[in-house]
Image 1: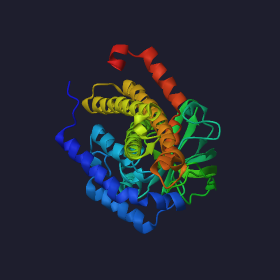
Image 2: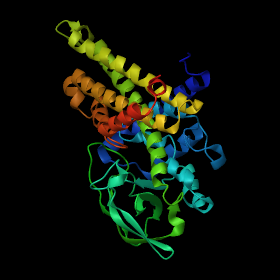
Image 3: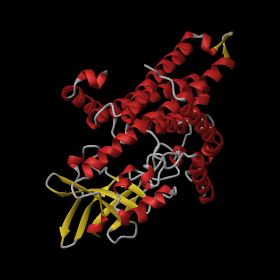
Image 4: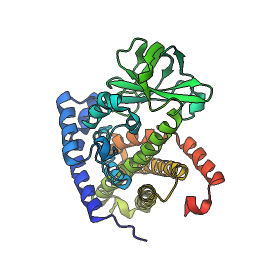
Amino acid sequence: MHFDLSDELKQLQAKARRFVEEELIPHEREVDETEALSAKVRDRLRRRAIEEGFWPMNVPKELGGLGSSVLAQIVVQEQAGRATNGLWSFVGGPYNALMQCNEEQRAKYLEPALRGEWAAAYAVTEPHAGSDTTNLKTRAEKRGDRWIINGEKWFVSGGESSIAIICHALTGPGEETLFLVDHGTPGMRIKRIPRFMHRHPDRHPEILFEDCEVPDSAILGKRGEANSISKAWFREERLHIAARCLGAAQRLIEEAKGWCAEREAFGSKLYEHQAIGFMLADSATELFAARLLTYRTGWEEDAGASNPKELHAKAAMCKLYAAEMANRVADRVVQIFGGRGYCADYAAERLYRDVRVDRIWEGTSEIMRSIILNGVMKRDLGRLLG
């Protein structure tokens, strides 16, 4: 077995780290203080990401993307995770659901997304339903050649500035369908934009659909395909979240190592006190394990070594372990820094806020455990865990 990254991936890793250090991290404080980036800065960061080959990585070449391997995406997402305040969103690619666009939809939604323009925001979660789409209440009723959508969606990240909303709705008993609903469509409106713990240049609005009328041509993919399309999106997003947690933990440990090496207390360096030193030891060990888990899963998907159902469970394992790990590391590092760890001038404080949501969005840790349990009971353990 060979665990080393190829020379090509090592070069990509170093290139991505430079991009994050030189282009993204310098804007952390700006976003933290204003929850915004100027249009000029946004445009420059998008352009630079495309120039460097960090966008759109997840789109096949035949559709105009870079066609990057899953492992290459993980390597870049990991470095992006070093940046606080949502700046990681400038690398990667658009929602993979847009690859289901037909030819007419590609020109309107996919092609702008390939240029780094914010084309579509995903609307799944509702006031009383999240990852369990069987509990969704938003419905689309067919009337002639039109669809009438009624419902409410929450946490629609970037939904205030996107071209359209990808609305996950029920279209019949046990049937779920995705619709592309343009901003400005009568009957769709932003109800509220709540504030959240983290600081991010994009918002997470609540969207209302009230007798919102759209044509058949608004369907993304085919009628009844929402569940399979959304599952593919969840799997990709969960791997990317896991990768970003690796980068966040790496930066936290690096910051703590530097602090412990220079700071003294009671006549000894901080790390020489076991209470502090063992925090670093535990953090390094957990990060190492999370990285192996995430890299291995990406490699398996590239190699076709696991079927989609096995990969669904393994992506859940990656997100569960990496997100929980990053939160433990962040908590320890804030403690190591003491009062400075509680100050927004320091990356530890910002990362502490940032990684908390990774245990929640795109499926909570509890949902991840349910998915993993389902895999344990239904799949061959030799394949699932081998």
